[in-house]
Structure formats: structure tokens, C-alpha cells
Image 1 (cartoon, protein in one colour):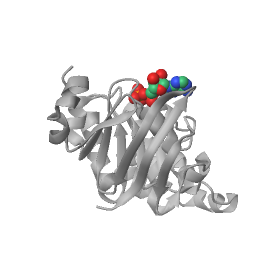
Image 2 (tube, helix red, strand yellow):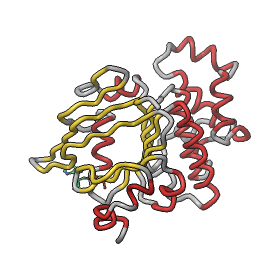
Image 3 (cartoon, protein in one colour):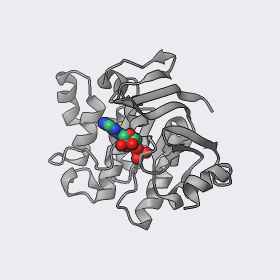
Image 4 (cartoon, protein in one colour):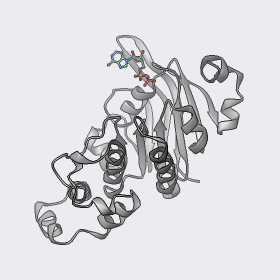
Length: 241
Ligand code: ADP
């Protein structure tokens, strides 16, 4: 398994308060890596730092390139994609159009015009992969909540993201949608790194290949589900509660 993204000694401060206080984190291709921890542990702020939304000290390296100080769009173009709890899709456009735009991001308008006539193969394949092949012409705004999450993940995939940072992707989903999402995460992690910020412990136990527990801005433990669950410090601050 190769490391796709390496974070070293990340610190994020707000008015002198260290929300992230010296975090090391490696995300590897082939892994669905869950980031867990109590509210306020620093999970979102860490993801904000990686994606260029929060200023930090330390280092984030992808494919040999230091990303600290880079702008959000530069980081996105380097293949680091993120989803939010509330899916940010174009509600008035269809599923296929949303994916087509994401696939064409950064390309010339002429390329996009040509693409209108024939959907690119990666858009067609991605619709199949995210389970929305029969929704190609459905406006994204009328999709079920879970389907919007899958569409958002699909938009990262067609945009060639190979490090995906997903914020509570199963929030608001029923049992079957959760299972489908868990399988999708493993499917896309085969040749990518997937990190999931999550509160749902059952989902984490079922689908994590690796877990990092954050507490008070620092890494409390990292390892397999069993290793982390058996760690007394983790039980004390989190899992035991
Ligand atoms: P988590 O995602 O694990 O719940 P967060 O990263 O949202 O935790 O927050 C970590 C800490 O940083 C919390 O104490 C939170 O109040 C604080 N924090 C987050 N964002 C800001 C901000 N913009 N300004 C000040 N404090 C913040």
C-alpha cells in the first residue's frame, strides 16, 4: 500500500488556541481510513488544513509536492477532493450534467461543448459505479439525500481525485444506504486513499481498514479497529462513553 498523502506535525491555532496540535497522519491508497474523536477534537479543522481552508504550520505532502501555503483550487487540482455533510451538487442540473461538469473542470469551454453530445466514458462508468445509472437525466435537486452524497463522491471521482476526504457521508441515511455507501468507499479505495470523518461507531467498525482517533487536537491512537478499540486511552475518552 502506497502513501498518497503525508501530514507531519500539523498545527492550527485560533487566537492562540491549538485546535490541531501537532498531528501526523498518513493516508494510504487501498485504505478506508476513519478519523474519529469527540466533538471539538479537531477533525474538521485538520481536513480544512489539508484542503487549504485553514492556515497551519507543519507539512502536507502529496506526490512529493509540499502543499502548505497552496490555494484551495491548486490543492483540488492535485487530486485532493472533499465532500461536506450537506452535499454541494448543482440542484438544477441532471446527474449526468453534474458529473460532466466535474469531469470537465479546468478544461476549455470548447471541450465542454463537444462533450455535451457524447457523455465521456468516465461519466458513464461513474454513474454505474455510484448506483445512479438509471438517474442520468434526473435533476440532482430531486435525488434522495443518500443519492446526493453518492453523486458528490462521483464528482470527485470523475475529477480524478485520488485522495478523498469525506465528512460524515452516511449522516441521515437508512440502513441499506449505509451498507451501499460502505461498499462504495471500499470500491473506490482500491486505488485511492479515502478518509472518512465519522461519528457512527457501527459504521466505523463495519468499514474501517484503519482508524485514527483524535482528542483535544492530537492523535490519541491509530491502527486497526481492534487495536484502537482495545486501547484503554481510547475507551476512556471516547469509545467507552
Ligand atoms: P471536530 O470536527 O472534531 O468536532 P473541530 O475541528 O470542528 O472539531 O473543532 C476543533 C476545535 O477548534 C473546537 O474547540 C472548535 O471550537 C475550535 N474551532 C474550530 N473552528 C474555529 C474557528 N474558526 N475559530 C475558533 N475556534 C475554532
